[in-house]
Length: 242
Image (cartoon, rainbow, N blue to C red):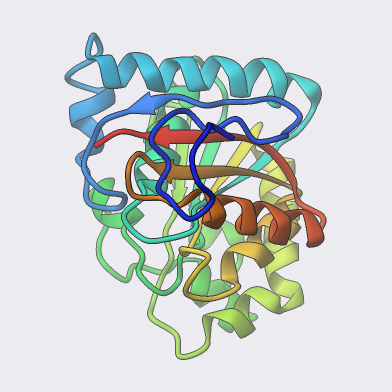
């Protein structure tokens, strides 16, 4: 970690003891509310787009090309930019020809559908987990962009943790891993529930997102310990700069 007090916010690039560091400084709207097209479709020469491409390079070189096909994007708290990173990274990887699916596994405060112009509460992950008659191909939105499919969160559910803890979640993850070269999961902030830990455990690999001058070093450390305890390999950290 950078030389800051454990109770203070991160002010520089975090350097936790991960297998490798995928840290990048990125600017953009708070997680979940940013316009994806403003970064990777209409502003390809911006500093933010360059940072996303840098993150893509590291993920491809040291994750995907090692045969790892899933990645849960996790954060200690809301407004760190988890959805921003997950969405932009998924689109960036798809842009170089990698068959990718972005899964909105934040069943409490979902926002991926809105970012990609999908109908709100269209059939999605929660519906599949609650309804055994649904099949994966009925809920995955194919080719939202070239090489990019999106699985939205679906209809609101009273107990998201119960849905994610069931066998059907692991089943659909296995289906996605067979169908796509990379599956990226957006997750719920870890300080509000244990949903992200469950998703990261099933995915097997996780990337932590922190926000400059807002995320506390201790929160990142706590989240990393929880993820490791749940057998999720942390591949790196991203520092967002708003």
